[in-house]
Amino acid sequence: MKKEVIGLLAVLIIIPSIIFAVLVLDGTTSYNSTDTNVTQETGFAHLNISDGNLVLYMPFDYNHTSGVVYDYSNNSNNGTMMNFTSNYTSSGKYSGALEFDGVDDYVDIADSDSLSYNGIQNKTISFWFKANEVSGTQTILSKWSTLNLEYLVYLSDSTLNSQILEANPAVTETGINADQWYHVVFIMNSTKGNILYVNGTLSGSTVDPGSVASTTSTFKLGQNQNNAWFNGSIDEVMIFNRALNSTEVLAIYSNQSTRFYPIGEMLFENNNFGDNRSVNISLNSCGTEKDAVLRAKINSGDWSNFSSCNVTDYVVVGSITSANLTLGFIAGNESTYFYSPFVGGNITLTSWNDTLAPRITVNSPTATTYTSSSVLFNVTATEGNSVGSCWYSLNSGTTNQTLTQDGSTSNYNYTQTSISNSAYTVSFWCNDTSGNLNNSMNVSFTVAVPATATTPETTSSGTGSKTYTASSSNLEEGYSVKLAKNQKVELNFGDFGKVVEVKLITSKKVVLEIDGEEYSFPKNSTLKLDLDSDGTYDLEIKNNNIIGRFADMEFKIIDEEVSSDEQEEQQENISEIIESVDWYVYLIVGVVIILIVVGIVLKKRRRND
Image (tube, rainbow, N blue to C red):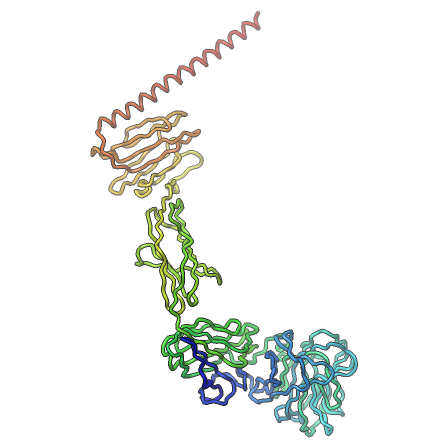
């Protein structure tokens, strides 16, 4: 159903490529709006009440500088603020509240059948209050004329009193303290009389008062016919057209009562943004307490949540000369829909045509060699419209990786954890929410991770038998591993493989066996082998060091043409060096043993002498 309640001002303020438009909640123009589960007042909008028995609801969450206090129900029981100079506080029981000075200010709400109690139709009044002082008589609420008292709730020093009819006794709750919030439920039951609950607990009740004629007096907050002004704060005033039970009373006290429809929308049609596709949506005032959400979209675009009453840098898809703006309302607390977000005042639309792309600064990687397969990709993207997304590619854009924004900062990151050894060129792109795209200068870098031993295929404790596996890619970079006696390395060359076994380790040399043939060389030496007998060295083995029972070995694929006699000569030279080293070692060990024996003999002779 369309209502002519929200208007577009006829004047558009145009500054080169910027258009300002204002949607006014005043109902005076011909701008169409369609509402779904939303109630619009003059200068105010909120979700509809879902409980048809709730005939008045004033949460006081909006600062009503106009002097009007809005009723959220469908009964238009709006109130007028009388003699207020400062009335709104953000420190209510829930969000805002009204403050009363105890001198002359009050809220006056016109008489209506929905607010009257005549002794036949049940009524329940629920509210929170906090007194600044507890002395004398202070009226919290009343419906009372000189002819008749319908109902009254007041403080008498530190005692709370609820009463229906002048002849009916009050129900009381003693021990009320200043500067403390209290929840009060006052039930007028046509068969059970006056029932009072304080903070979810029954205080007492009276007998059935009988049928009475209702008055034409107004419903007042903070005053009665004899004044008795209230000094303190009042919040969350509700009147139900029925008597609530104890479970419902406790639910209100515990914020578990359902009050609103979960979702509502307001649609504003035919907005003209000229040639512009970038739009800011600003609310003069709004409220989103208790997990409630206000959001907006234009045409069939994505929803965007308001932040501090603003949606910025929204990019319009579809028509820009006849665009539809939708405001979405989502009630707070999904389990109970306790709170309604609200919109207060004008809605301002500012549109412009953004042509400036983001500026990209590449922070990582840099033009260097990385010895880890984990590389951080990080850019800073600024300027232009709000940045929409950033991504990078290592292979000319065939496969892209999206970067993640670092919180609300302008940094965008992604860590790739398994990059193979190679040379790379990375390119970055970022676009803004208007679709402007920018790419960075390319950055070239290298990944060269030294090969290390893989997890053994078979393992026993200590220095026992182990078999390691080296792939062809490992061997291309150089495969390093610490080996003990009887341990093996499987070398995979792609089209063939070899097994190397450690046969012997001394403090000076290592003996390896390959295909039944032993090769022996000292530490800090290199051995080149032609494994497939094609006249080209295939494998280079380095004995980098010998530490205790371990030899620090390195295996690497090579492609080097060398004659076979040079290979034999190399092995013979290594063997001769080892044999000569062994001869001197044996000679020294023998001399030491002889000296020890001679020493022992001489020592025994001295003792005998």
